[in-house]
Image (tube, rainbow, N blue to C red):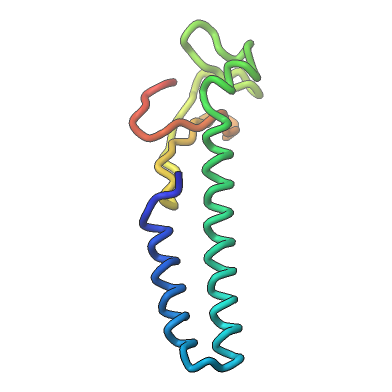
Length: 117
């Protein structure tokens, strides 16, 4: 789910633009429509990215690349390296990206706070 901070920013932004348009002019209505459209696009792409990250999780990786998961250890499906690293994905996604430390291939995503290698 998209975090409340990002949605509240766009709601406040849209309200401010809406207040500016109270004069009823054609330019005001166009500005309001643009602000609503912009806010909608940003929220749409955030939800789309979040869905993508949730779909490519550890279980997906194990099913997609069974040879890359040896017992409880994960290896890179491209170069077979054991150097799996994780980094936080910023932009208020609260996800971690697990990637190969040798070739840089993104393997899967997990929510922050989960320690799975």
